[in-house]
Amino acid sequence: MGKPTNWNWEGHSGSVYAHAIWPFADPRVTWPANYIFVRRGRNGARTPLYIGHTDNMTMRWKEHSPELVEAAARLGANELHLHWIAVDRAAVEADLRRIRPSLLSSPSPALQELVPAHVGAFTRGFSGHDEPSDAEKTRRRAGYRTRPRASSSRR
Image 1 (cartoon, helix red, strand yellow):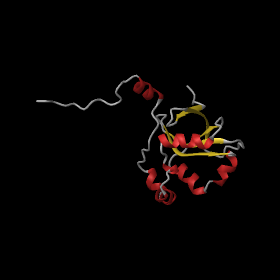
Image 2 (cartoon, rainbow, N blue to C red):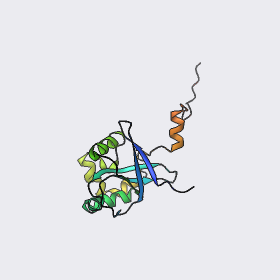
Image 3 (cartoon, rainbow, N blue to C red):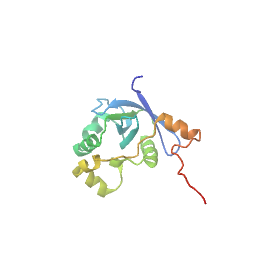
Image 4 (cartoon, helix red, strand yellow):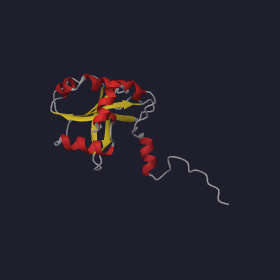
């Protein structure tokens, strides 16, 4: 089975946004888009590292500070997810950020200053908020427990 070419991200509102999957590199596309710098783990779980929107993806890629792109790469970014069909890109960005805070999109100025200078410290042992696999989402929807109950003995 090949790698998927699209990935659906669910927002806080419950809306689902289909994103095309691109390699984590300058996409060379000039149209407007919502975008996510993503780390895809070996198990297929995807972690958003940065969530944004733009009127021109190529221009925005160049406008990002080299530290942000480098920090995302050091944190394991290996995919760029692009969503083109949103009418209100700022609303889509806000919807996605509300449900899954991403390390590099954090509103905390202290974190923004810390990440580029000490990105190596974040990459060692960083677990992030991995997106559950499709199988895990199916189990949760069906009501199956994802972790065994702790055994308790009443006497």
